[in-house]
Length: 207
Image (cartoon, rainbow, N blue to C red; front, side, top):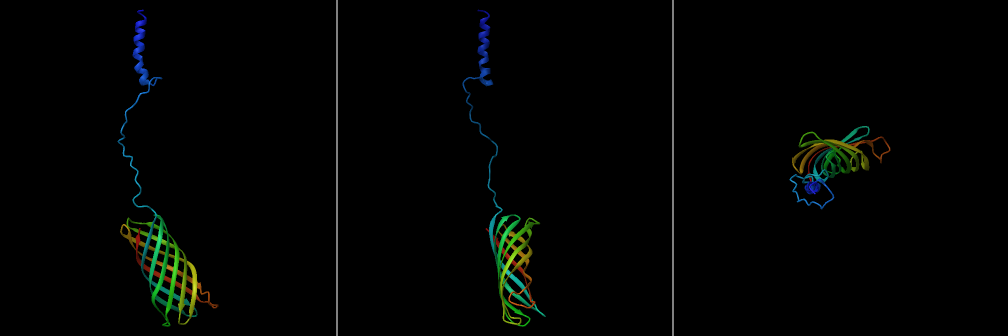
């Protein structure tokens, strides 16, 4: 009996150890613990993708090369709009219409042009980026002078420019675009080349 008493006492003392040590006993309920870690997940405040629209003034140069070179300088307006796919790539459409023009023969030139571009861009400063334009243009050109021209043309078109952010949603831009480059006129059987360039300055608003 004396030997049994210490054994019983030792067994009773070991029960709490099994309870905390993971023995097969009644489950232990833990009180909730509040996590003090900052686990907030916030959406980006300025998404990469966005629509934008803009417009501005264009100074256009139209040259028709036959035996001589007939030149026209045009004051035009330009409308543009696009979709920014990432900080480095956009898709942009542009429309030009001339307001007034007079070529070397004092005849009127009328032009309407639409173009669609892929627009890679690269920021060089916090508020400044440079970009290129690569795409295709569709132009309707008519002239009442010599040489007489009435043509619809499409051509590879390219450009280069830069923009400056004056506000979080407003940029000003300046660029050069070659709308049509040294392309024969479709309606002329003789060798008449056509070049159409534009220098543009404008403003765009990003939604």
